[in-house]
Structure formats: structure tokens, C-alpha cells
Length: 313
Figure (cartoon, rainbow, N blue to C red):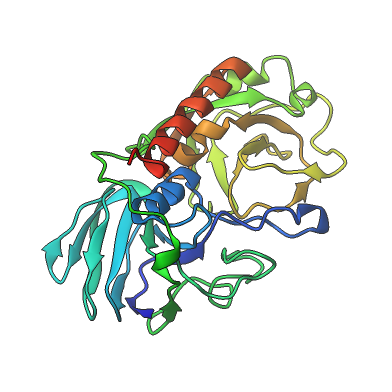
């Protein structure tokens, strides 16, 4: 069974959880910008957590299904129709053979995740089906989808039973603005004593030249105390690296594996998906928190997801 792409949307890519374990060899991770919504969409159709989905950005695609399947969409809120009839977000529904599925107007958030029972079964590259656009690796020839692409779908009988419908997403969807919590470091000592206070003092605007690799932020200039260069080290998801300009860059899913700019702070794991629902022109308010708050937020998020992935019989 295949899904045929009639219209590709603005930027629709295939993503699973990412190409983890190869960063020491210079291989980037990729994966979803909003990992929670990706995981939620898979849970709603009974897929394994690592099944490949479609990540849909700003403007959604039009698709035609060759056979009946269970489908669900999580993340950014879109109007959606199946053969011109409305279908809900955050709920599994059946798509019949030869049906046309269309995305309409976007309400909140930037990225939605379309999961299909059985997952998208393109051949993996280095253990992952995720598309990394910069290196043209994974997905369909390492690129965004285009009209005429045919996507093979896996066997749905191997998955779990579908979850129940939800009233809303697990991720609090931002409406052009989000408060993002961070932990200091790993190189906060490379900045002046007031830099963390300055980071929290005003809003940062996501620049138009931002992408899946990172958000270039325009706001208060952060001053280095020990120079703007370090010996290159690892670049985890969500770090705020600061080049000589003093304008931070929030590294996201397609980030490089290492970098030579000091990193003043790191977005907590529970807020990565919120950041992933922002786009160019949106604003971010940073708030430094304690490790205990970061851990409590992650535990609460995991409990919410596990309640969906492992529903009571």
C-alpha cells in the first residue's frame, strides 16, 4: 500500500525519532522538531514510538490513499478534510481506499505530525528514516516531499491497538509566542555576570532565516567575557549558542554535531516541543529554572504520554 502525494505543502518531510548514536562520527540526528506531537500521533494509531510520520510545516499537503488505514494528526492545529468532510485533530480516524485527505487553514502552532497505522516504510539510512535536509540524507532522496511521490506504508497488524481520542494536544500550542524554560550552561561562565539576566529581560524574535537547523534570534545582545570562540564540542538539542554578534541561536532538530561557539543555556527537555511549534516572526521569552523544576516538568509530560500509549484495557 502506498500514499500518493498530490500536493506537497510548504515543507513536508518524513521523520522518525532521529539518527541517534552516530554524532561522534559527524552524523546529525534530524528527527521531529516537536518530538512529543510526533510520539502522540504514533500512539493514536497504535504505532511503535519510532515509526516514521510526516512532519508538516505551515502549509499542509494533499494526499491520496491506495488502501484503508487508520490515520491521526497531532501538533499544530489545522482544518482537515477527508473527501471534503471535516476530520478531527488528536483522534484516530479511518481513511478509505482512494480517499483524498487535505489540510486547510492553520490556526495555532507551526508543525503537525501525520501518523499512518504501520508507519511510513521507506528504507532507513544509517538506522533511521528521518530526513536531514542539509546533508540530503534519509526520507525521500533527502528532500522535502514533492507532487507525485509515492510513500510505502508498513504492516499495521504489528502495532498496538489505537488510543482514544483526545480533547487537546499534550503540547501547549503557542500562539506566536512562548515562554521557554532553560538551564544555565554548559558554558555560562564564558559570558558577563549579567548575561543570564539579560537573556530573560526582553523578548527574542525568531528571524526569517531560521530553519530546522536552528532559530536565529533577534533581541538583547549577550556579551562574552572570555571571547566568542571555544574548542568545538557537542551541540545538544535545544542549546543556545552565541556567536560574536551576541545574538543567540537556538539549535534544533537538524543541528550540526559540534560547534565552536559558547553555549549560555539549554532549553529543558519538556519545553523542546513548545519551541518546535514556533516559526519565523514568533517571539520567545526565556526563563531560567532550577534542575528540580526541569525534572518535574519532564516527569509530568512522560506520565501524560504514557497514559495515552498504554491505555487501560
